[in-house]
Image 1 (cartoon, protein in one colour):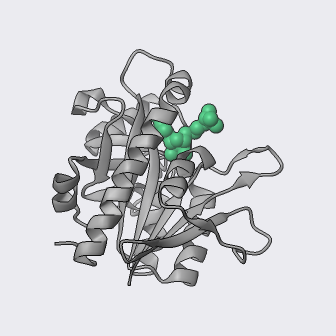
Image 2: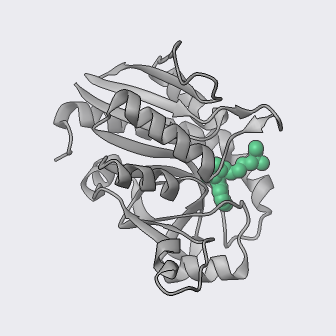
Image 3: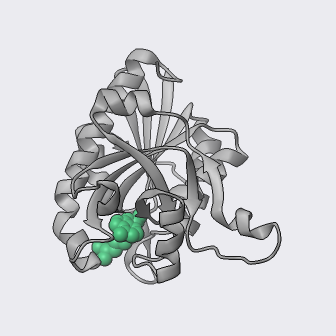
Amino acid sequence: VTSVAVVMAMRSEAAPLVASLRLREVADGPEGLPFRWYDGEHHGVLVTVATNGVDSRHGVDNIGTNPAVLNTWLTIEQYRPDVVVTAGTAGGFAARGAVVGDVYLSEGDFVFHDRRIAVPGFTEYGFGRYPSTDVTGLAGRLGAKTGVVSTGNSLDGTEVDLQLMAANNASVKEMEAAAVAWVCWLSDTPVFAVKAVTDLVDGPADTAEEFLQNLTMATGRLAATMVELIALLGESGWPPE
Ligand code: SAH
């Protein structure tokens, strides 16, 4: 059985996928930690959806790179998946052809845009550039776009962030993928991203408002793509043809 682990930040991002696949919550998940895991079988694939859970101090979802790292590490230790998918929502760049509701699969390397370290050697370390598995074939079969995914710990972007994202040809911007990819690189686990666009970084709307307005639509599309993707992996195994 091919085993796929899907790491996701927010409850609302994961809910449509967990429901579509009829996954059950893992009773003996990581002890004393906020992460919530769901698993089940779909087309012969063992699917684990590992969500980051809630920060009990602040009462909101654990988004950003820190929870992503810890949850990804524990999920890999427990399931030894053939592949990790970092899935969720993202801001898209209209300048690179993104439209709200698009689903992107990752291309090239995962980069960070908010780790600026002007010390010899550390500049490139800051960008990270941890590799994505080449899933252009899968994207074609799914009718999804492909592009570079850029990660930072803020929902907004400073002028410098935006310059760096442009220099790295980023198609989408979010807050977890490069952190997940770092853990996968450490543990020799293939990884790619599936990201649904909730908002346009270079569009006129307020990002937070646009995000909330499109969240249900985008997570629905994300779930539909993931269900189809897992069925394709069930047919072809890993790596996909
Ligand atoms: N106000 C929101 C906060 C969501 S933060 C709330 O309801 O709690 C945004 C989350 O979606 C992050 O996990 C990030 O990965 C993703 N995301 C969507 N659009 C983004 C953007 N434009 N920039 C950065 N992250 C984005």
